[in-house]
Length: 145
Image (cartoon, rainbow, N blue to C red; front, side):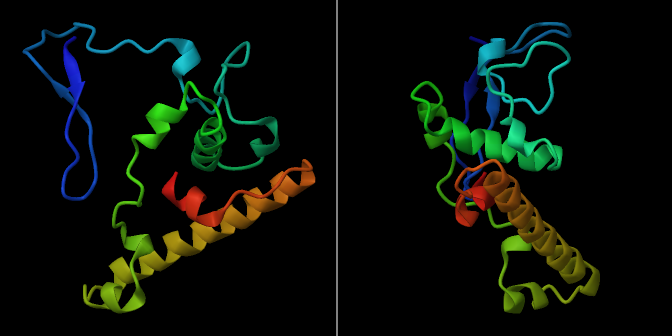
């Protein structure tokens, strides 16, 4: 193959790394449709589209919930278990005293707003799941996804 999965960095992030030079137009990676996480199909639903009960939620929340739902699928489990167990240290997940150390009010306000938005989306996801007669997802799992 032309690419391989790079080693995790100190921050726990990984990515695809080219193994050799490539020309413009070279196919580096092909992913079969049955292996695609997607939030919207233009025709017949893709196998890994988000569950219908998530339709009222933003696309990124749908994608996270779709990934969580795939954790029960033996074909997806190895891929999803390869994700870092802990979320990367994003500003929205930092403790207030750590945020204040940045001494940047706009940075702190943006992080607070993102944290509030994420919590609101979690509550919306819980409401949508319960309306569909399902158990609500666990908040730590939603944050990780």
